[in-house]
Image (cartoon, rainbow, N blue to C red):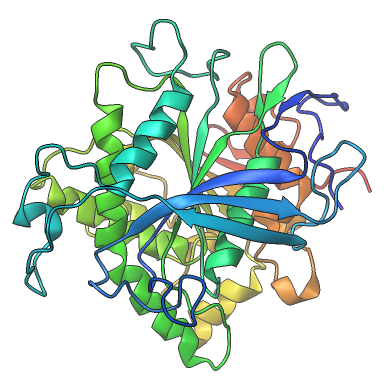
Length: 404
């Protein structure tokens, strides 16, 4: 199993990693899944009882069962999740029409502090250093604070499984510093109501519908996030996005929902890097503002990781009657797209467990993890990453296998 301390240079580099608990990873979360009630102790696989556009927030601690010599988790599937909702204050319940978006129904009441307000305020405080806040976008990590990573999971994930995968990315997508140390990012996950099952076959269509209908809830969470980023005392750490598989389909609807909530105005850049991993999305999605074409307004750089031998996407393509997938060969064309969009071919480094169908390389292959860490570090030209070979310099790359 890959050790999370693989260095970013040509050779191995030992790193010091900031940690909040030995063998534990903290995850902030938002979810529009069915609330725990009665005999159900966790969030379910249907929508919040108030509707798909409502979400709750909270914190979770992921405790790892297997640790390596460096004290970091060595088995991504060996974990347990303990979580707690973030309570807030709310006015008396109001009747909201079935098709009415909450933000257009009323403004936040004076003195009201919803759970999302409390949670994001805490995250903002953690990400802001004690001295002067940053005034301009950063190309490299701010050594005074930690970055944050937002994760949107894909098809067939339970609530706990989604948080576990988010935590694993927090343990492996480390942020390299100029002094040779590395830092785990804060992790925030949005969990939409995936069924957590791949069979029977209609579960795919069910998840796809649920992902699309979750767009407004994600947009509302992003909008709340923006309220804190837009303040004068904005956080100093960078914020990155990782969407995997069907999570990219959910992201499309979140972006469109946010655009609608802002009355069609230009979106503010929230993310320094957006990683579209094994995307179960149309290959032309970045060309159309009706799909993911607005994403460059939200992210300074967009990285499309794809593999032509991704069996899960081949099934999506051939048996689910979807058009060619973004996660197979990357964008249909880069002509006319923002120069900040790049495609990274992982076809030579996509194999993991046989049951994964060459679809989980984004979190399990050391070469891909190392490449992501180069991107997050921002310390060298992409042409010089030891993990890649240029196919079309500045636009398309191929990740090469590491030493056996």
